[in-house]
Length: 455
Image 1 (cartoon, rainbow, N blue to C red):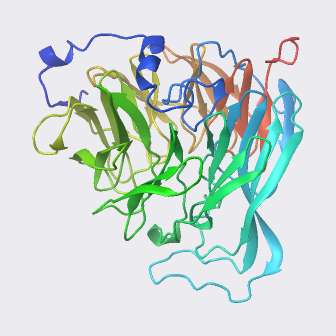
Image 2 (image 1 turned 90 degrees about the horizontal axis):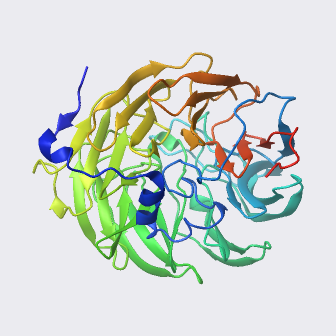
């Protein structure tokens, strides 16, 4: 049943021209670093969960087949790794035996208990060819002031790179910048977050030219800030009134010569001017606990959320002011949107899963019309990972380590079901002929081991 609610009539909507993935990719060059070789930010080279056009990852593997290497990581983590050339960067947090001098007390509204030991917050660089650890640095050793959700970890926000430096956020523990060889260049402390029910933190920093953008949504005093990428010094800071904990990573993109920062949120999706931090537009209607990241198609962005209800809006980048009640969105959708995973885009095909369930939908992103509605995927359970689009396939990874691979077409035919039997919440990524899966304690490189060309 069609539940898309058009804010403009279909005759106008269908005038939006079609565009191929390669053409669309060129429109998002406002987020510097997206054209670097590899997977240099958490949403990938096209900023929408799709791999580069030359990616050819395997579609079949198991614990003993097509595993090029598997590397143990210290502690645990749920953040998606990034890849730059031959380097893979991944974050983790490891509990130590060192007891806290004064254990922190839980906040009155917290449903978690803070730890009573120190944690090491660790940055690891892995060689892409061998899986060997090239370097490893402990950014900080500290006792976290909050606990985290049982399905969460203290290392949940992906790093990013501009090809010159590596940028890492451990949230309340600090923002850290490293050289690509592992030298600490600067660090910046933005305060201690107070998250919803003490469920923890998970926001990836975003590089945009000479600025590093960090979203800081919490239960009180939420803000977004731009730091100087070379020094870590604050450039601007903008309050986000009405926003609470959202775990939401911004999208930076350019429209009509102006670079915008698009940030989803519990109260509303908002756009900010990259240079000044001034709000450009806002659109209400998102659900509580907004986690999915925005993505762009042509001259609009799609923002969605899916905790306890469902919401998705296609918002023109030409918008100004509060457009919530002005019927100026292109389309909206209110069925089966994701809670934790983000949507992914393949050409005009918008893929997303329902809540944290293995139920997949696909919309025509130009109109909001359904192509496939809530297809239940057999063989895979609950999931936190976002869909990966690569070489004509859609990869859906469950929390138990099972990855279902489907055809990227209207049939969504399942071509393989692959089991690793490991706890995986990070999203799968693909570079060249390799697929990378990060479990809580390991990093897997999956490639056709029968071929001489594993990259």
